[in-house]
Length: 465
Image (cartoon, rainbow, N blue to C red; front, side, top):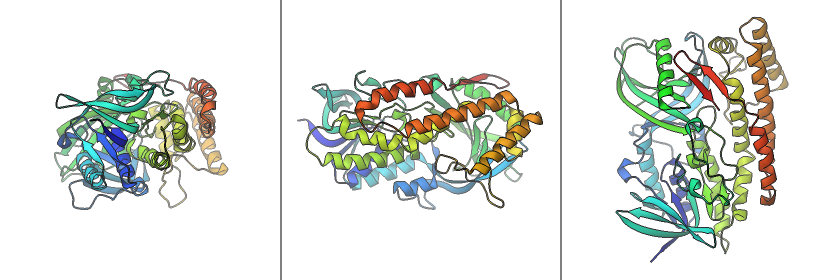
């Protein structure tokens, strides 16, 4: 007998379990399929960061003090120039947690609200009727099992297990993430050898190297992280260059981890007949940090609202009935992320010398007198004309002082101009699916204008696409 559900979700990571929990609370029958065993989920990356305010917006009960899930809550970060002398303190409300403990807590919440989670179950293929998705087939303990549902959600992570296998005419791009489409993340959990001596505080960002020093659960410990496109090997070379220059106090490496996060624009549409993709499967990440968890939660809240109304209606759930998920996401957060991703092609050009000047002269992370700046709290910088003028004058002064090259300032201005255009274009995402194909043609033209950046580190040259 074929089991039937309102919603079947593939993947019980931070995206899949969250939208499953939201839909279960609304009273729908939910099945979540996860390939790993329950006790093994979330073990690939131990410690991750969430924006504190996003946890509250998502309606998730915050982790409790004194429990092993919570590493700590922090209010400030430090942005360091590549001279390792110049820095800027910024406000960054972060909750740092251990992922496996967080997921186990979410599983209990979802199950308490009626969701069913099947661990050790591998997605095999989609089920179709009349060329439309009606369910999935999975394999568990060597047995093939078929599930039917009114909608299938791909939350399988960077592999995009379902999205990449959709028919090419299903209205959703089926690209796979290649070496230039991801940030390869390398983490070292360290313990300071001489904790009685001064060592860098938690939450330090080293923007030139795309590296950071973060808190972890180890006593007198920290995490050294770096993220770079191309390969793990290239990331390791940048990390070596960074550590040589950083000259940290002596430490012992306790363990190492690695993974990758999407670094490209998401598919132009997230929905099809009986289908939705979210999270890393949809390349939803905050371009400036690579964080994707809380960004996807914002998408899931939109999707849950649309799905609630759609599932209450009779009949098959078509692409048209789901289309408002696209509209609401891409006209807001999606437009902001598109703009920030386009901006990176200007920002990543800056040299060590230029970054030293930018941080030292307060051109970036500006704040009013006596305040700590809080950049991109809503994924965009709200600046007055006067503030924009001050930045422009600061850049011009850098050129005259020979602290910045005119060529790189020109690239930044061009990238910012394109960022404004792409943001405005996404804010006019087509309300009618019939207008989608024409919208995509213009969007493709705008993305083709994004420049590839080639940055030369001492040991390796990295290309940012």
